[in-house]
Image 1 (cartoon, rainbow, N blue to C red):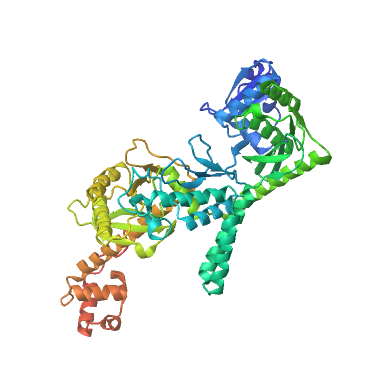
Image 2: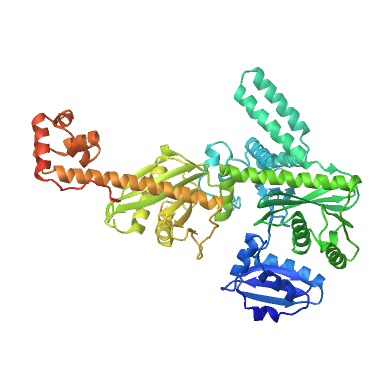
Length: 619
């Protein structure tokens, strides 16, 4: 709680206040026409206030004020400080990432086609923004499959790998990286894709429809279905590229929608009666805020917090779904900063009111998509793999990932496990495990190096595709031990990453600092899932070896029980405890074990009662 004497001596000028906790972390930022009464109002009677404000007051230990010359300056400063500090008790306004662009790197000899949310002046061609992400991604994938565009990030032809990636083996790329597709042939394909993205899909649509019908007539139904999917993708791209004529003049139209603690905001940018673009944001950390609060926060931070296309391009009118207290003040600030009059208005009827309905409909649609995606609680493998490529700065999309883990029980039964994932899902037919052979069995670094060398060497010997990414369960030590192994095997184009369990940090070769991802990041969750699967598989194998060793040592004192009969007993009863619990008849039913030998085994256990605890190492 803040000392009341401090509150009583706050300035009465207009300005901005920052409420902080005991560690001087900013909790909340607000503006006020007069700072002292506004801040003191938080610490009066708390009855009737929401839980969020009560918690803010409980945690607040200090207040910092910044006095400015006018309310307008306070409004601008508040927006900038919120953007800088992102205090947890303010409404969180985030960029909505559902309006991406398709980028074609036409400046490269072998251009790439992929999704991006960053517009850069780098010579590439950009198409969008796309307002319906699902159909856009689906359409893009159809085009890429139809034209086998490369998904890697090599700087071709200078920076080329020694072997093609998994995309080549599954028919999604023709491997221009190793010279299997010429630059001229690849360029012709890119020119066709550019025509499609420009909306000129008519010729290809008719050609694809003819192929589909011909395939159906010839009973090639799989080919017909593939052409059908291509048609749907082409139609989706064409729809997204069309401009919408909505009427009116030059306006920005704001719409908001809310579902409990989540909300979405949309700005329709209308110029000369045509909808030329949409901006969207989403709100989180909502509790008691009203629609008025949402509209005020959205408008102020959208135009003053650096999220707008530029104040020089502001229209003469900004249409709002509801008014708010600082509406005239915001209009004054925008007019001064843009150099012309900007009006903020709430139309009640006519064409402008219908534009507001359109903006509100867009906001509701975005919110429904957001809520639905959260409820699904899973991400498409394709999207996660592209995100993982971005986070780790990989050259290729890691469709084939393996993770290697070392496990032992108090320095004995040291084993390595290799689990494989394809397109984000386990590929159990490719799982492998091995005993560590080296004399360094208590050295996790050298054990990891041995496991990687044996696994990669075996894949090379058998001419099997190498993984795009190898994940090591460990940190810098494991990574440093494995890098020279891949260099020695001439497999340095295989990407490496070490995942340290303690802080979930990611280490990459050539980087001194770890990569830290949000615990909620789907890319990190995929990495954790793969690592945990490798750990489970390694422990399972290590325990199996221990069980065999314990059984072997226990039964070695029984005359007539050699390695073959020990294996037979273990296979039949599963553990030493299972053998102890068996009857004479059960033991005698095992091939190679007579009744005399069965009685001898039981007599041995009676004589050595209590020895050889067969429990697992975890108790």
